[in-house]
Length: 170
Image 1 (cartoon, rainbow, N blue to C red):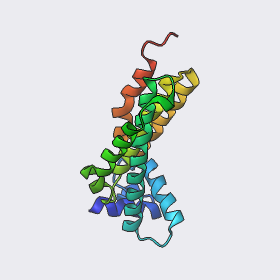
Image 2: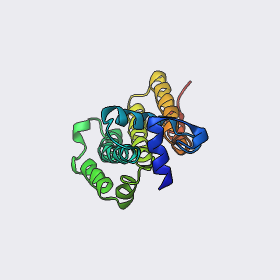
Image 3: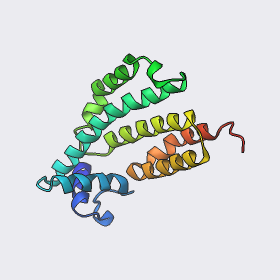
């Protein structure tokens, strides 16, 4: 896929005019690509993109476990009370999902989108459990930074911020 090659080339030289990567540029994802290239400088552009996808896929499975745990903690007073099988089941569903397998190997930013979406869900649940204006502001900043990984993240996860602000006494 030409997009995977251009993402990989962006790890070596970020140049939107040369479609490295294609617009809108995905600067947050390019930072991840550059970090992988820094750790493994011997990889070619496609290798950098593929390894980054694989790493974010593994992170997605872990994030599914954590986000489920954080959501379950909203319904109980103690994290230890939530059954262990539910977060493990969520992680297993993520690990076995065919789209994650496909996007975990294609060299594009979709697996990173899944990872950051789950991190935002888990972060929102954590903030909701112990809300403060500072935590909500940090979450809003994280939401904006997630939009640098993939612009749809900020748009589609924006309702989480509304959920955090809903019913809050100012």
